[in-house]
Image 1: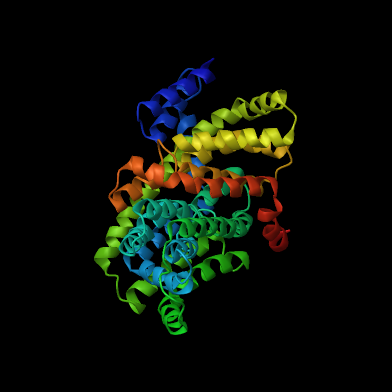
Image 2 (image 1 turned 45 degrees about the horizontal axis):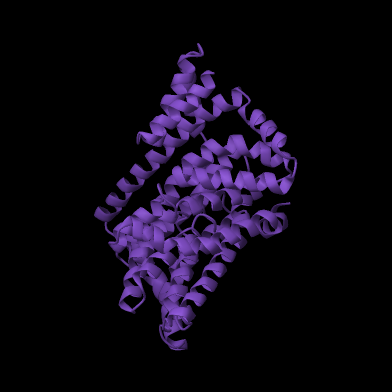
Length: 425
């Protein structure tokens, strides 16, 4: 009964608008206070929840993304993508997707993509005569590639909670991220044919090589990060530190667009973002410990199996659960709450934890594009200066290719598991 009331308290606090970390912490305290446990349990589990070496990667990847945006590197990425694929019908739509793929290898966060590249992309598309709704929709959809292609902040958090190799998770996300990009480019091509969107310009080798020369050093960032991790030179944490060092080198020495005042500002932004993430992880650790101690995962698994023993049906039910929760809850919080409950069920169904991680993160990325939370939509609403409701409508058609890719990855695990198998197993 106390456990049920804990979920009631959590739900009431979330509906009332309490921060996720506060809602998780207070609902957990309610359970502990009514179960006779010592209050020291709270501090012990909070400290253990964030006392993890891989989590050190989180602030460094966030800082690297901020530094890339502040030092103007995103402009060079956009210019290179424009020179590479802008010649296609609906060229700037393809540029939008291509730039997100490149930036994904640097920041690993959808919001960083939407806030950094989004401002450049939407302005360029508007100036070229594209509909604002199309510009906002493709920018929102392409930003979800960031947390799938390595490096990825959500995959780091999932790896810590699921006790799964982060290197394998990063390897598993590479091909799915490229499939997402391909599906969105197909959608752009369809839109472009129907609405008669123009080519940006004809392909010119001189322009391409000039843009490539300007962007070649930033383009080395994903090679350093991903290549270093997959080759075993770096751990994910060390790769995050290397990304920050390389970003500082580009900003201070090569392009000279950074100064200490800007670094101080992005450092404070990083501290604020990291603090909120770590507080969520710490509060979730208490909540997850209570769920584990009360065998909630086992009970949930038994309930699911009592409904049906059909593997396909159970996978679809799990997918639906994650999709719905992703609409209402911030990504990191959803990962920390859902993983201890759903992962045991997935393992029972024969789903590899690495494969399940990719499925879960893509589910939650789709949640970033749906109300009422829809964090990416709120960011783009400010960037594009359009109402939130209009962003929702503009993004809705682009959910079709993303959900299609989600189902494809769910039922064809080889797409995400082939690379980790080759590199690690």
